[in-house]
Image (cartoon, rainbow, N blue to C red; front, side, top):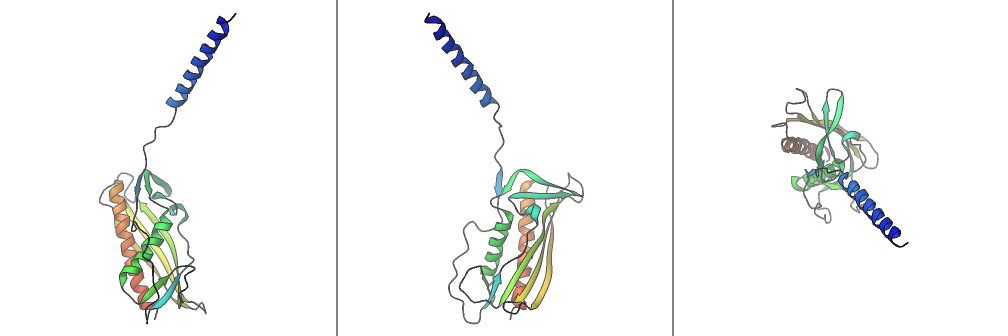
Length: 208
């Protein structure tokens, strides 16, 4: 009378163990994604009071290419869009771009002071940036090295009157040295650097 329940318990335990073993073997074994960034690791340095003669420019609004705004690295082949497998930005591309923009103004040494949202510093102008293209384009086929395209539309207006002061499109096309993720990220670095360098110089020349 007691042997059958014992055998039944052993049978159930064995079935449960086999079931769990089966579940474990079916778990996906994905390779961890490599993370890349194009902005300084730390946050931008805290800004003190504006220096005499500095021009405050509020950085606000603007759109970022929707397909590229996340942490996925966007590629385009003809009319098809895809993301690079097993590779991601360390944060959403839109966040990293904003950090790189702030760092570019910090290190430029011009008279323009970029003022973030909510900062108490007074502003004279508003800078709106629309990142229209932020992608690696396979223009010579899927096996060839792509060309990174970074295109930004900038619009500078007066803070109070919203009068348009200047607008311009900044664009950089940088061929990757190879069809590898590292080379593609390096091309993004170069393209972003070119666009931001031109943008900072244009803002300093336009905001007087």
